[in-house]
Length: 71
Image (cartoon, rainbow, N blue to C red; front, side, top):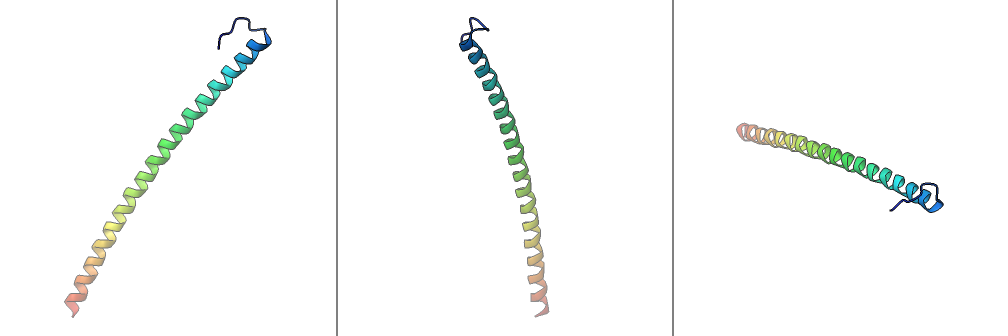
């Protein structure tokens, strides 16, 4: 928007719109940052979940081996 006279009502509106646009852009950047952080946390949780699943599979295998030994 082209501002020629800051005291002109239409230019005042243009200035207000620019400020609101800047705020909206800043909020969007913050939301994008939060989204990236949340995605990273989810990935970390998924990795931790895989570790536990692998441990459970190893335990199940040991239990089956022990059962077979006892037969």
